[in-house]
Amino acid sequence: MHPCTKAFYHYPKNREVADESFSDKSTTNHPSLKYDFYTLSKGNAEVKVYCLPTHARNANHQMRIAISVDGQEPRVTDYRTFDRSETWKQNVLGNSASNTITHTFKEPGSHTLAITALDPLIIIDRITIDFGGLKPGYAAVPETKVIENQK
Image (cartoon, rainbow, N blue to C red):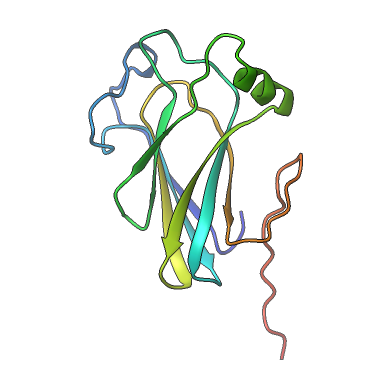
């Protein structure tokens, strides 16, 4: 793992994920992960979360996650697709489903990204944070390298 990134995972005990939808508004009782990371820039950035293209468990479930940066109010995004819709087909062909939120970073430096599964069967593949200039590609973007000052 990159020295500027740390990940923390939380999975609540005694929760049967496969049989219930996470419908309450609190994100504290749901499976979650947090990434500590460092930015060199401030301003608007696109936070894009890529998941594997799966279907909801059944008609009673969605495919939602809540995304929060630096403890701000979580923003919910849904990856659910239906049957063999055009969106589902494109997700399967690209082996990825993605949603994006825009976040304003007020200062460069240390930040925390929190992602909480609000429904079962969410499989996160990767995350990008783009302040502009990220070129689209088929495969995952290589991790940013930090070069120490050599004196």
